[in-house]
Length: 253
Ligand code: UDP
Ligand code: MN
Image (cartoon, rainbow, N blue to C red; front, side, top):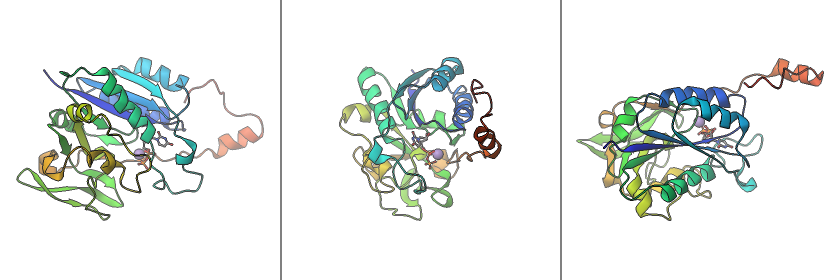
């Protein structure tokens, strides 16, 4: 039987949230045996995301957990200063541990809501034995970052920053067999991990480099991009708001 892909997505309220989730869901609709674990960064599940998920057509589980105050980036802080989506991904892991039976086959993938995914990566990651790896496009201040492989093993990592980290690639560049997650129930993402060590805080406790299984044609192909959606300009909206004439709030965008 085909293993299930557990696709864990943290998501938060912003102007482009519904657009990003729509685009992602319409990718995921093409993937068989995929379960989408959507975890909102909020105290409660929002109506927008609840209604969206009900009609999106993807099999899903929906949660909400707010990022603790001390972990939130403040206005003007660079995006990398504090890790984003950590509590949410950990809640996803906890759900997997509580709900999967021992004989259920699957793979865990941390898929952010604004990245771009080629469908071919899903059929490759589905059969991950321990941890599979592949390069990610448009990340780390480079055109791409990722493993350099030879004859099916990872030789080194191409990155401008601390290539010696246990997992020196972006969250979008690896998948984990659920058995590793079940067999190591204490392993979670460390919200206090220093910059660039979030991926390593999980992977480093589950496997070593020799275990990494290169995908994407021995890591010579980009099948995932760390795209970022531009924050739309709200100049006119703000102007109308100041005049007390903002656009119809019942229009869900
Ligand atoms: N995210 C979140 N709370 C936040 C910021 C981001 O849950 O306060 C989510 C976001 O929706 C995305 C993931 O965490 O799925 C990574 O965030 P983002 O894409 O903004 O980070 P970057 O692209 O800079 O890695
Ligand atoms: Mn992103």
